[in-house]
Amino acid sequence: MRLLLVAGCWVLARAAEVSFPPAYPPTNDIVLENLVPVKMRDGVTLYADVYRPAKPGKYPVIVSRTPYSTERAPAAYKDAVFYSQRGYVYVLQDVRGRHESEGRWEPFRDDIDDGYDTVEWAARQPWSNGKVGMEGGSYLGQVQWRAASAKPPHLVCIAPRVASVSIYHDWITLNGGWRLAFNFGWGPVRQESRIMQNTGPHGLPGVDAISYERLLWHLPLDTMQKLAGRNAQFYRDWIRHPDYDDYWRKLSVEEIYEQITVPVYTIGGWFDIFSQGTLRGYAGMSRRGGSEAARRGSRMLIGPWGHGASQKFGQIDFGPQALVAEDAATLRFFDYWLKGVDDGISREPPVTLFVMGRNEWRRENEYPLARTQYRKMYFHSGGHANSDRGDGALSWDPPGSDSPPDTYRYDPANPVPSLGGNNCCGAPTVAGPVDQRPIESRHDVLVYTSDFLKEDLEVTGPVKVVLYAASDAVDTDFVAKLVDVFPDGRAINVAEGILRARYREGTDKPKWLEPGKVYEMTIDLVGTSNVFLKGHRVRVDITSSHFPQFDRNLNTGEPFGMSAQMKVATQTIYHAGARASHVLLPVIPSR
Image (tube, rainbow, N blue to C red):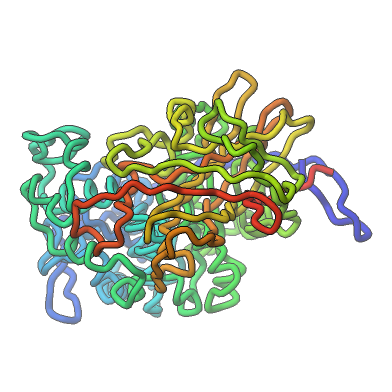
């Protein structure tokens, strides 16, 4: 269902069924040129494989730049064949210092100039009609944002999938909380191996003598990679820059949306590790894009997925309608912008999102939705919200002035284990929507649960938890999860976030806590689209660790990654009077 504004009033209307047209059949035989040299402005040569229609002529070009090898990534050349068979030249290039390409690779650092030079090289080739787009996912998506910010004259559009827009805020960290499992597994373990062979546990090359799980427990973080036989300078640099400083600011697209003048089609998943990049990328371009075409032409598709489209993720099967052919969706975008094909995409609302709970697709005109009503659900308890056996409650009604606070002890030596959530790529725990009851039984997890819902409650958009909290440590973490409690008792996570307390005023302004002082702290849970169905309950879990998805805050305030010393912290959450801790929900009215 959807709402229409008629005569100044919201009225209920039936939402049009969202359809995803299949890709049209292949129309071309193709030829492949291997190891095509592409000279960069500094003289370094990068190498690409060029897939193009066999019939002579000039075609629009799609560029994809990868650190994962043009020779050893079947998913990459699957896309190359798909597009070239449908009338595009597809340039699949190894980025600087990776596999066939020359130079020294430092993640993310050279992708502005190299992306610009590759786009302009492609536009000059005899098989090119001068119109160039870019596509690809994850790292292959992030490099598109970087190239587009340099404004190559022949770049017409980009289509980043499951991609970051701020390497600091949604890749290396989640708003300051360090993504340990991903950074270590994707970083020195995978990327220091130019050829991925001798694969050990969890698909991590060369990690055989010691398990990945044990590696992640090692302290200090600065020496962890030595146990895996790695010595990546970029990983040491990441650890030495825990704050959002100039080292990271240069890699943030969020600082420079105004410099991007081409339409952007962002595609991602509610449970993807880079969901924040998908959501903020679209919101940023639709508001701040550097041209009218960029603002009006940008689009977003987000499903109930992890790091790529699927029908089932975690422990939830969202039905066959959840699985969408991403290449077919992107093909329509490229056909419109690079071939001038009027396939109807320009007349569709720009946002297509999957509403979990009802398990249906819906088109919207913006994100966040204009009709959102931001409503507070308040924490309540008698001072014993610890675990799902405690007395924690959620209510639309604010608590009284005499509601006692809740306390728990956070011990970095015994952290709350990661269970589901927004993770991928080498992590040793399952990602996605997963029953949280195994960890909700712990005393160091506060559990606040609403009454059974008497009607459906749709929550679509950004979610935040506002805590009034104190700690006896100078620094610590607070983790929040939004959970859908089913009638059978299953407690399925739908959104999550973390706040490193030193960053409560911003990731560029670290400030220690004064032990015992109460602070207002906001935890960003990024976003979701979920209908809490009638008979379900809304739950918020609060704790101080999510390991190994995020590193353990050792609570000491010692330099990040350099110490093995730990302190047990006592955490206090207030929810009375002016200190009314709550979750701020983006509620979509049903009538």
